[in-house]
Image 1 (cartoon, rainbow, N blue to C red):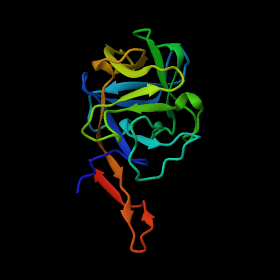
Image 2 (cartoon, rainbow, N blue to C red; image 1 turned 90 degrees about the horizontal axis):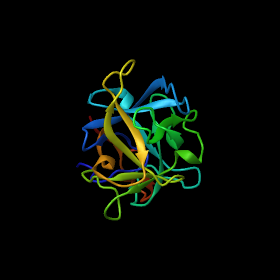
Image 3 (cartoon, rainbow, N blue to C red; image 1 turned 180 degrees about the vertical axis):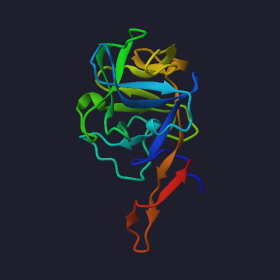
Image 4 (cartoon, one colour; image 1 turned 90 degrees about the vertical axis):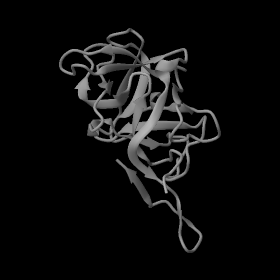
Length: 197
């Protein structure tokens, strides 16, 4: 059976629906602003640098396999570099919106790594378009289509913007979706994997 919702501990790719690019990071730093690791949007489907792990915040534990609630605060950790999706009051390099970077070490950064999932019902459904609101600055994770040149030619700028629009809608795509499974004793066992690549 296919899991219909997005769960804690899942490792997924996130698609910006309007621009058809997946949220991406890599060990390339911004040449301006914070100088932190850059976050971009890529058209490639297969790139392993587009996997993000869904985790709880430092204050709210996220039990593996439990559905993410609409309004829940999460961290998105870039799998290959261990840095968290992050934003702050630096200007993004191309559009001068709010910079979005990847920050931290082995999944631990600071309170600027926390995002609120905005969705329609009670839980984040996989087929649903959702928004990610940066908790500290209230800005929404967005793409408006600006393209980088070298060394990341053709990748799109990812930034944060104050007002919601078509540019800030994202959907869960490929990934490994953790699901809770009942063990015979009735205690919950969160080790079952549901993989869809």
